[in-house]
Length: 400
Image (cartoon, rainbow, N blue to C red; front, side, top):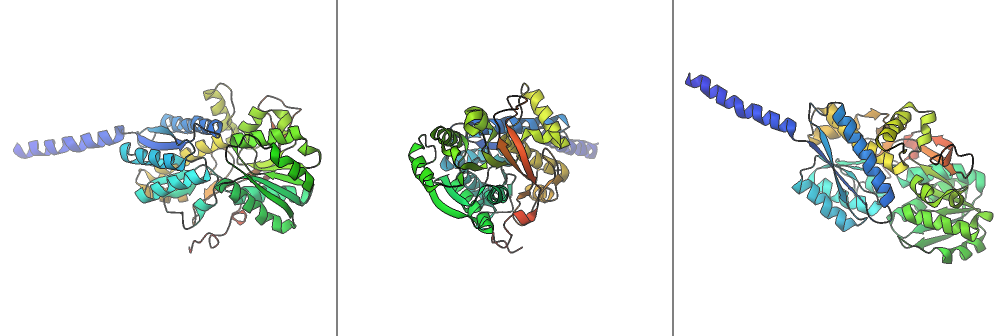
């Protein structure tokens, strides 16, 4: 009798521990700049990420464990991002981090996560995060990177619209990397760089740059900024009349900025994007994703950067489900084995740097023949996924 009682007592805590483990949610930390010039994009990322969480939970979670999203405002500040990331890891014991909407901020997040051995899936453009000096086995990059984006845009515009080019870019990592990418692809087409002009992040007045740009008589003006900076600079360039003699090109043509600034300001601007909702016309997964987003958010469609919030979270949760655990080593292995089509066509992570190999969509802003207020771009071309569009593993400093 005593032995039987002993067995019974031993089984109680074991069963309780298993039940408790099942009840503890999978926590995904999500630091993004809810305040500041990228706030509109960040808020759309949160909406799409919450959709990925809901889908995971509705489909049963991980052996009954549900997931939750812990959103934090990094204020577009690397120091704030470090503080919020440490809080998420140390105080809230998150199982992974997804987020970052600035090159410098995502690198700060990555420094924390690789030191703490927490998986981080970045959803903002950066070239450096793929390089060996910043990379770790815990680092994944769901977003496009500047080399991929500018390569696709450059291959489209330089043969078609001229080779005399002026660059206008913000004076921080994002702007520098975008200009570098355009210069790299531009060498293939013998472009002539007339000027590289830098402006502060968060500038509101760009008018002082335009007389100089106009005097140089460029064929192309590559405006390499983001968010509200892009919206204001393009609007002011249009008002100045810069489009009369030059084509405005951007590496990333933002849906949120285009909607905010209106059709006149952006008319004829060409750029690249990771996603545009009209991909649903040809890609079934895009239609499924858009319909779920519409249902959840009153008929709205997801933006380009919003969709990255969805993909960044969904890939991590899918890897956990396939691994059957939240153990980071096994989740990393499962991430590298993913061949997925969640919203835009086929993707996979390259082994050496964990970069998502994916398509780049070339779009042009339009001001007429719009079927709805959201119908703001024409899709000009889709460059299909290919590792040849990435910098080589050796160039990034990876030996294997």
